[in-house]
Figure (cartoon, rainbow, N blue to C red):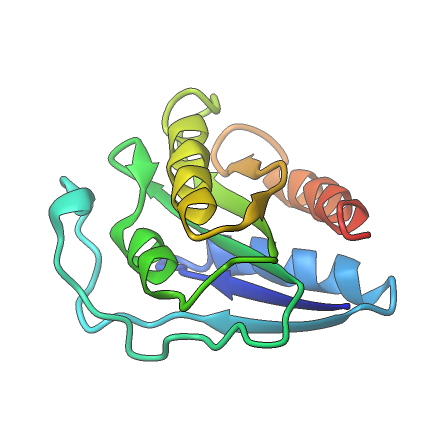
Length: 159
């Protein structure tokens, strides 16, 4: 079994969560690679769904059984880089997909839930079997402890 983690992070918080996920997966002796996607334009916090951008280092998911993809919530939605990556991936058919996001608002319904739903819908369109996603609320509580717990939960989904 092989796992590909794809992450978009502007401040480092989402990358920190991706690294926790990778660590939890590797503890189970499962092969795991991570790519931090880079865009040709910096993300805008206003209406990011209309932002036009390109991914400079589109990840290859050939040979991976699971794709775990995450990014920060922007404007109560999945950010443009994550959605662009999902649309540009060759195919998720036959793969399991796990979305994750980070957000600064304290409650999941303040963007995280919508972002996970957007990513899940796009992954299903590409033929993926979508598994439960995770939301980290950065500014509300001990988010590093939450990251470790949710990373473990994600690793438990890998069968």
